[in-house]
Image 1 (tube, one colour):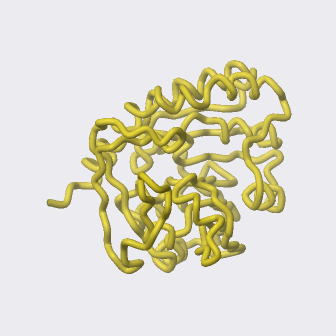
Image 2 (tube, one colour):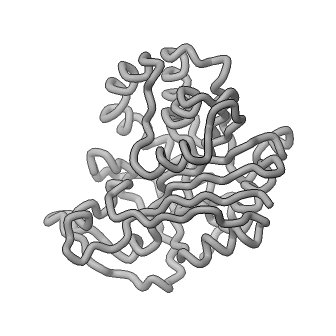
Length: 268
């Protein structure tokens, strides 16, 4: 039976809290060393190019689904003057606050524990840019309201910058034994995945995890949700390289599908 939006987001928050120590095992030692460098920037490729084109310096930016905050910190290092990262997982935010402390960025970078659909009212119209990066959309049970939230955060003339997995990628499933990905799902399906084998997308450790829920959206649904919320499309680039570590073997496939996209939308 379909759950309420809040039931989905609560379940995902608990599952991500459970996954945080496993991610830390793979990431934190290197991250804690890297962020001491004031030039540390985690972005690369087309998303970094898009941020530089749009311009970050001097702006107030909020990142939705910031995970451990390394990208939010990177915005500060690119010149943003106020950087707010939002995530529902207290465990990941605890890692992020340590990153920020090590970087000496407490005055410019703030991490906020919140359901994206329940952000503080003082955030309304407070930001020049909303940043959304890899894997956020698939955790959102209501795409329409998500883009309305984005629109509500932006000042007049503000912009959404998004780097995401391409929806075509959700047609594929990776064989756990061979590592070979093949088409298993219809692009036009309305899939809601319930999974309990963990969220370790770094080491691909399978563990008996609490249930998490993800959602499949087509590209036209993503674009129209933004447009219907009052955002105008400025730039759109499809990516032929792996950005998610999901079905990453497809990057080398002679019949490679699009693996990601970078999009910029503006508040009209």
